[in-house]
Image (cartoon, rainbow, N blue to C red):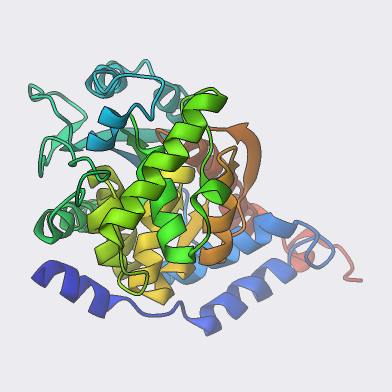
Length: 350
């Protein structure tokens, strides 16, 4: 808890002066004012976050957190929980969607076992930080103890600090955990007080009857646990997931270390939402990668106040959207650093 407390205390707003200075630099480029739209917004925010008006495209790392979920016992997923470790091994072999898209964007994928019900052998690219072998079934009681939730948060915080220390310039979030759309829906329902039906979708592709069952299971879990919407740690503990907690910690740690963080889809945004509820300034340090097909995702983004960079109808997770969004952010930085000014190009200003 001490690391979490210190991290929250270290988070401060992004400097408005730096935002203005970065925009002034962009306004002097050979283009009409604001004509590169979101690329300009991305570049100025990145510069202000890092405190560098000429931030370079550097080392990018996607942390894909993995954990299992006791709620799978209730039949809320189309896949069995054995798929979680199988997919982790696929990540480590470089064969998953996130691996392909990370290679395309020049990012490294690091897989974090924070709660998989499987004992992995040490392997390159795998970070073993197991807090428990999955959460408990939140339809029957709390998913975690408060101590477990804090420990998982602190895993993410530590990874962000280490990334900053090794010179990583941008981190992305990803996840793997069969059943994890159920805790994500429960989190946004608890925090927003929206109905479960308004924020719950098909996850791995379940049919209509399975979706109805999933909604009832989540409703029962919220009724049983009664998470306090004014205490995001209580919400995380009672209906969350270990990988969601790890992501929340990474986002908090990134904000404390002035490290830009690119948040993937629905499950990753559940983690980012918890982080933002714990400290409102966190939202200034994150980039929302894309809009997920999952219906609760838009509500999360609105609550955070984040505008997604992409809308590609994704619902895979893993960090796939974050990998692609990193490429767009790189493009914005190159505009800031490489595009000629009016004076350099000998072009008359309008």
